[in-house]
Amino acid sequence: MTDHTSEDLLKQPEPDAVDEPPAPVSEQFKDDPVIDTDATKTLADYFYKQKSKLGVLPNDQGAPAPARPSGEAQTIRNFVGDAPQSINPLEEELKAVKRELALLKLTPSERYPEVLDDAEISMEEAHQILDTVLVQLKPWKERTHVVRGLYVEFQTRGQHDQRRLDQWAEKTRPQLDTTVVAEALINNMAGSLLSYGDRVFEGETEEERYKDAYDFLANMPYPAFRLLQKKLSEFDAKINAVFSEGYLENF
Image (cartoon, rainbow, N blue to C red):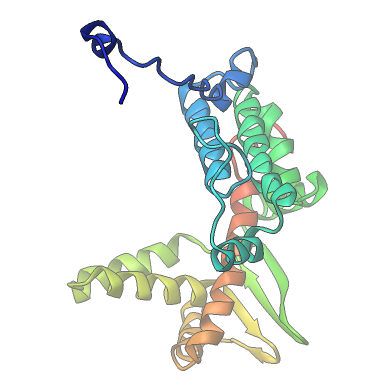
């Protein structure tokens, strides 16, 4: 049996050395002339923590990330790939943020060609769309591939399409937001859809053509309508890019 003096009992054991946690990822951006906002630094730290959770980087205490059960690890690999590849999407996100911040430093006129480039629109095509809508006061029409041998034709919508939806809302007084959204979707689709495969929507007036398209869409299977809505969203995004800030200076 070992004898302990009162002095020995009062001694406290020396604490084990603790590794300093790794510096936040945002530190590597502190001198970057582009990435210099708190929001971006927070985003960088967030990505770092996500990598740590996936076992790609050490955890916040500086120790290697704990091993995961084989089933969970396999699920992660199936979703993000092996560790070296799983870093790439996060790095691409950071690059995208950096590019967006760099674009904000440009004037609208300087930024416009970059917006078109991101949307894969040539300046020549943008000028054609602008000329058709602004100078000729006509809708821009475009044939779009949907699936296999199916093509549809869309056109840009006019003020009458928005007025039609407003009049419907005033008349029916819908109680549910979902009802408004559903009507807006089919209203916009009927306002834009000129043809579906061999089916051409016709009428002596624009309202008659709209009614023909509306009745066709109202009886369309929902999966087919969702696919068509996706294609219309892509068409609308293209038009929005052409008419984004800075278009007048570049027209």
